[in-house]
Image 1: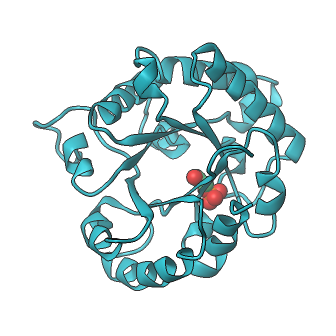
Image 2 (image 1 turned 45 degrees about the vertical axis):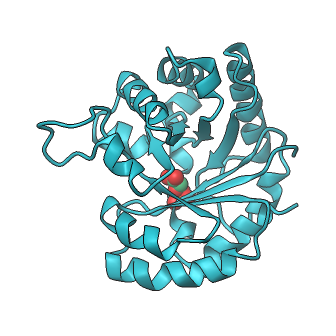
Length: 248
Ligand code: PGA
């Protein structure tokens, strides 16, 4: 793998601020030895302030799990890009749970992505097919559509900083990991779609039940530049081996 691997932990709706304050110092001591890997934590919004001070001076990045595309205004319950930027350098956009439970569309994803680039946040854009789409052989078509609509109208110089996470929806939180051949095939397809958009340098992560016992194999696959980790990012012992898998 030629580029610096990227490993992000998506805590989803887990951990209170108190729990985060307990976990992050332990994690950060252990992650110190994981060199040459871009490491990012994505906790709930409410913990960003506390964690950003705990991470001061460390090489661990901080990301939000979502944001609105508008800069401010009457959007009760939402968080604006500039607010995220106060604490973070990354933001997850278009996670399949946002698409499934909160009705996010590729158009919303595109608005958020452009807002992220404007605010100099690295967007981690999630794509992936549902079980139904997978079983009907539509993975390539679905992922191509998500990328072309999600990344539409981005200036290609800025867009080079984007990170794409391929997460087959049926593999998220289910313990079902896609077979290595499926992952390699999907990543080759995504790289090809990105190449056609002149975005060859965009990293493509894999996500979906990544664990200590499958990460070594997955990171060896061509086109896999790192991981977006959910459940296994919630404890030091389960996250550390995954971050280490990127080391060489
Ligand atoms: P999981 O979640 O590792 O728990 O499957 C991955 C994700 O949703 O980003």
